[in-house]
Length: 335
Image (cartoon, rainbow, N blue to C red; front, side):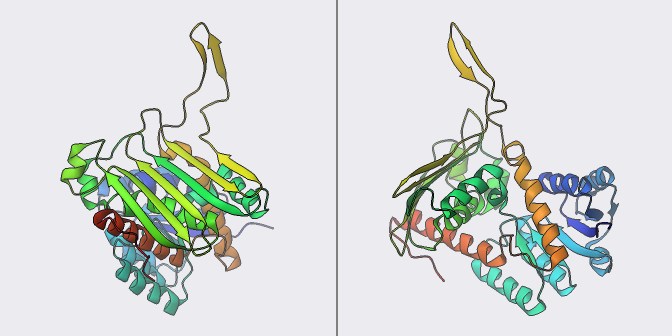
């Protein structure tokens, strides 16, 4: 029996859009038919590489052959494109966040609910093989009752200041992934948020009104604790680690090195470096999350993919962290 191929339109042909386009082009059960981006050169380059056609968004949405859209455009366009795609009857995969304003996210999700459109949010870290195994062992009770989760997420270097100014800040832009991971691993919603931040890496980030180093503590209703550390600088590579402590032991997930080869000589023993940035570190996760989305579209259920509600709840935690860091108070996330 031949596979039913799901045809896609891609909105946004920047770095992450081009990555997703390459993934779709390599999948036997998916086809990228259209690419749309306001930057003509980027759209054309991505389309040619994936064997797709450059068109305007309206034309892509009007095509009945297109069953799904992948939104990888700038954050300020996400909610509008989700609504347009939902009304056109498409299944939707959207990169995080849905929007930087929680009320706008709520409005968007009302449209999604009214139209019945399938919606998945690109929290790719849930699909990383190492983190999936970590979660599976937590769920199997291998360390008993979970008491504490620690999440470390450090970029190798800061993004351009121009990006910082429109990013929504470290909590909504960078740590939002970690808020989703915290909810996923804790198994219950955080009810208290305490945050502190500094500008230790790049003074220009502070001048732009943002932070480049932050620590956030979360507490759930049952008392489970989580601590998240973010930094815009890690000179040794892209630092992504998890730890969970429970009544019967501890789980840890470290940074996969480029290889498992180590070298020992007169200077000592050293291993290979870790991946430099997110494209290298989460290459497998990006493939697996789109596999899960395509399979979900085929069977009519996106239960295995992060939902619009997951996107909203991570944003509400980010908003609470920003409020706490600004006021110095412990904050209860808004419903």
